[in-house]
Every structure is written in C-alpha cells, then in structure tokens.
Length: 263
Image (cartoon, rainbow, N blue to C red; front, side):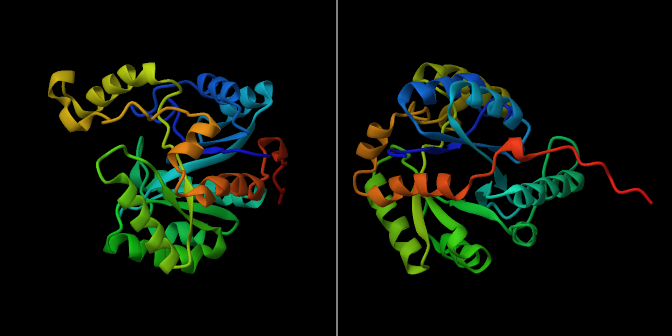
C-alpha cells in the first residue's frame, strides 16, 4: 500500500455538516487512487453500514470510526482495531447519547479513557497552546502509542509555522503526528451546499454568515500526490496515514448475530 489515506472524512450523516453522500465520497476516493478512506462522522456511527457497502462495491478499504466532540472542547478521531474495540466504541456512544438526549452526545475524557482499549485516537487541535499540551499529556497517558496528533492545513496566513509548532509540541510529549484533510465534501463544487448547511445550522443568511462559513474551498478530497505536496515538510505525517490503516484491520463483516444467553 502506497501514498496517502484520508482519515478524516465527514459524510452527510453528520447533520448540517457534511455535504456529500457516502457513495460520492467513495467514488471520488477511488477515482483519486486513495488506498483507503476513514469515515469519521461526529459522535455517530450511523452512516458506516452504507459506507461499508459502497466501499466494498468499489474495492476500497474503509476504516470504521467517528469523531468524538467532548464536553471540555477536545475533539478526537477514534478508530477500533478489532471487534471488541468496536463494541466498546458503541457502548461509549450509547452512554453519551443517553446522557444528552435526542440529537446530542455528552462525553468527557474519562469516559473515552475507560472505553479506549483497542482504539486508535487522533487528537484534533489547531494551535500549539497550553490546552494542546494538557491534551497531549492525557493522550500519552491513556493511549500510549495508539495516540496521534492531527496536522491539518487551514489555508490561513502562518499555516507552515503553525504546523511546525504543533509538530514540536507533539514531539515534546513523544506523540507522533498524522496528516488529515478534514474533508466535508467530495469535490470543490459542493462547497456551495456546505455553505447553505452552515447557514441553516447558524440560522442566518449567506450574506450574514461571515466567518461562520468555511474559509477555504479545499475541504474536499485530494489525490495522494497533492497531499504529499501540501505536506512536503511533514512526509512522516503523510506516511502514518497508511500506518493507521494497517493497524486497524477491523471490518464490519466480522459482526455476526449472537443469540443472547438464556436464564
């Protein structure tokens, strides 16, 4: 397996966030020659069966996962390495949804740590600040070598310096980095629809949305060679996307009906 695998893909199963259907994302990933794609909808596994079906039809490897948005503002991508880890992730999401009620999820870091065995965790944090250092310390303590820090371009001034500082902060805590595209749609043309979804979510018009809209059209899938160019200063972070794919062999076909034990 060579190149780059996109591990941070949001589908339209993330309500008012993702602007592309699973089949569109899978087809585009296949067209670009991506060896694998990681589905990470927000606090949900709702779309993974449909994504799994489309990925199998396309002959594309798909990682089952989700993005956890915690109550303290921390965000993590989590991917189960095996079936028991997938079960723990399902129980974790059920716990958070029972607490918060319909349409929400309430989870703290300790909840993730308790259910974290067998999960790979990618910390999402854009600034090298005190909050990052605290999160990296917890990540190292609870996930060890299963913890990563995401490097994501935001196409803002000073992006190169920001990524360098993130890498240095991660190295200081003995955490490795991994490149992600934070994908919201499959092609740049879908940016317009994503803007509409943002306005519905924020209860405003396009004219009044301002910086609540995504600032860059590049929240789409890119081919491996383009990601290698964008992250030319961080080739190891690009290569680790494939490392994560290899470390997460879990497939939905491993799930089988289990008759419950009778009294």
